[in-house]
Length: 119
Length: 119
DNA sequence: CCTTGACATCGATCTCTGTCAATATCGATG
DNA sequence: CATCGATATTGACAGAGATCGATGTCAAGG
Image: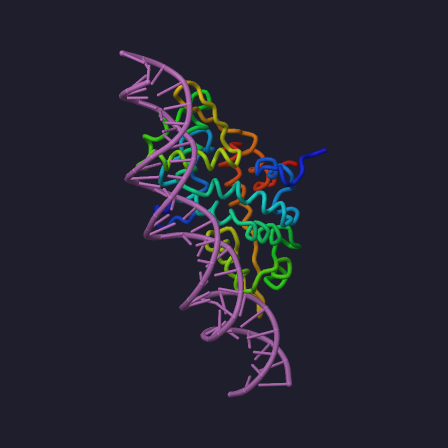
């Protein structure tokens, strides 16, 4: 059996419905999927995700990410937290540095939900 | 030759980049793609888009859409305008009624950008 | 023309979000 | 242990967004 709705993260929710243009989306499903899109719907976070995902070995240190933006360090940290909280990025602390890694399945599920291929 | 950046809508912009986890997204591309995701990042608009897309003949009258929500008519009209302004919905007025229609290519391009298949 | 019905626009309000400065945490190093 | 450097957290503030009531527009019927 699957997780209860209460403990289901946005990441889990995005893999639970047929393509958006095939069947009407339920109110509860929409409420769980929207936060994932909201996390993506910011230029800085889009670029952060892209930087991490296209980085060598699929992971990137925070120290590599800040230089690409004209933003303060807390602001970058905040955006990374948003992406992590919603389940798009994994975080791992190694020594003094923190490394982030994209969870590819989440983006694939989201693409299937929007594009309508498969499932 | 392609349109200039100034007259390019979010809809055009989403079809102009390699998958997000392959190459780092440029600041200008991110700035044009984010509004499209922002338009999607609302539970009501997600359901509106899904209702229109899964409706018979791929189009739906506004009069069919409002009943599914516990929201005022101006609010529904506002959300439809957001989806239309960003290029996700086409609008056509026939007599007294207004019909909306999903533009499937936009969702397909967005799915390719996120999911990384093709291109 | 006057009314009615479908939808859009406007103005106000209330909440949410992006940003930064200041501060905290935490591991490494002298 | 005192310090330093890398990230995270907190608090504050300005701007953006969601919602609604009131009003505008426009076509169809009487």
